[in-house]
Length: 173
Image (tube, rainbow, N blue to C red):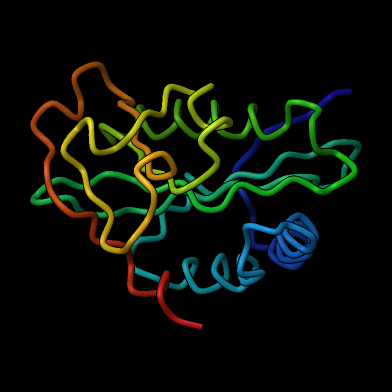
């Protein structure tokens, strides 16, 4: 299976919307608003076009990942949310490709770290560990096991401490 990871283009928006919606349709841990969240974040000041990536297989978009800027104290980091893969394409390594390429591009853009709220068995595979171990806290009530951070540059989170400030679009409906 040949999968290409590339930056999202304007003409991909509707297909990405469908991919994200289908990816979370039956997810029990979801509020089923991720497709709308992506749309809101695209229009936010926190949106970084270089960090909105798609996975393409046989000229069809099968996955999407979005990283947006967040603040922790006076530091600008990124938040991974969401990563979506079509249900029939899950467990084939597509999410992994999206996350790894996103981390690589983010590091090249100078971002020192990424935060994610997600599955505590999945994200540690990519270096994520409890955000609290870096002194990074969520602005809402969430299990310490599910709120994680990763350094994109060695030592990148050493001097980062505080509460994450997400884009307001994360909290709108």
